[in-house]
Image (cartoon, one colour):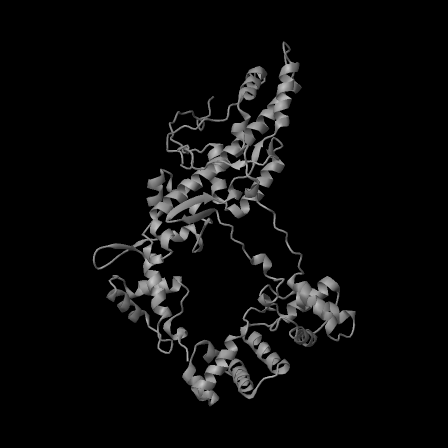
Length: 515
C-alpha cells in the first residue's frame, strides 16, 4: 500500500546563481591592495600549478576591453554553466592534452616579456623593535624591589596594562590572576604599592586607571622632575587642582565656575588649562616602539592619479598586478605523457593523475583570470569616478565635488551597483592633495534656494570653515550655523546641521568654548 504522505510533483523555479569564477572575483574585489599579497600567497601555497614568474615583466594594460559579464550578478532565469562531471569511460585524455598544449600559455600570465626593472617593487626592511610591555619590563631593573616575588607581581601589573597605557583591570582580578597562574598570594595594598612604582615609568602617565588619574600623574611628575619658573609652577599647580578637585567642571568647560572656585583671573586659568592640554591622554603613544602598533593601519593606495600639465593620468598600483603564470612543469608533464601514450589506452591511475593536473591548471587559470578581471573592473570604476569628479582631482577643492551615488557610477560603467560598492569600499586613491578613501567621494545631494543640487560634502566643507573661523570665546550654536548656511543659499534644517557636525566629530558649541 502506497504511503499517502509521499507524493511526487514537478515544479519550475527561477534561480539566481553565480559561477565559481564570479564568486572568486567578488571576493577579490572586496579586498584592498594591502591584503592582496596575502591572498595570492595563500593561493600559491594551495595550488602547485600556479607560480610567480622569475622573469622581469611588464604590467598588463588594464585599459583593455573588459568582459561585461564580470562584476555583475546573474539575472534571474539566466543559467550558469555547471562544472562538467566527466566519468572515467567518457574522458578522453588526447582531447584534453591537445586542447591544453595548443593553448597559448602566455595568455595565462599577468605580464609580458619586456618588464622595466625600475618598476619592480623593492621590499622594505622592517626594524626590529621591543614591544611596549617589554619596554616597561626593562625598567623594572631601575626600581628597588625586595625579591623575585615582587618582580613577578610587578610584571603581572605591567602585563595587565592595555594598549593605550591604562590599567583597567581591578586589583582583585590581578590578585586572582597571580593566585591561579603563579600561586602567589598578595593583597590590594601590595598591588597598589607596586602600581605606584610602575606609574613612575616612562612614558609618563602609564598605569593610570582612568583619564583623570593619567593627567594627575603627569602633572605630579612634572612638578617633581622639572625645573619650573614661578609662572610655570603656578600654572602647573593650578592645573593639578583642576584635575584633582574640579575635573567635572573642566571637562564640561564651565570656566566661570572654575575661576570662582580657584579664585583666579582669566589669564591664570588660561595658563593652567594650557598646561593640561599639553598632557598626553594616551600615554602608550609616547613609546616609539608602540604597544599599540598592532592597531596601526598603513594605507596602500590602490590607484594613483597624476596631474600632467592639466591632464589627469590614472594608473593602478603595481601591487595590483602580481606576476603570476601557469607552472611550466605541469605543461611539460602533459606533453611527455602524450608522447609516451601514443597508441596506448590509459589506465585508471594515469587518468586520475591527468585529472589532478587538469584540475590544478584550471584552478590556476581561473585565479589568474579573476586577478585580471579585478584589475580591469577596478580601473573601469575608478576611471568613471575620475571623470565624474574631474574638477576635484584637478583642484583638490572639496567644494567642487558633485553629488554622486553608487547608481551613477554603475550606469556609466555598466557594472552592477553591488560591484561598484565592492570596489569603493576599503580602496584608496593617491592624489597630489593626499590619499583619499574612494567611498568619501560618494555623497547625497542637497537643494539650494536656486534649485541647484550640491553635494553634502560641499556643505560639510563650508560648515567646517565656518566653525574654524568662529570666535572661540562665543562659539556658534547649531541654530546660528543653520542661519549662516541659509544666508549662503543652502536650504538646510537645524537637525541636519547637528547631524553633519556630529559626522565631522565637532562637539557642541559649549564644548568648543575657549578662554
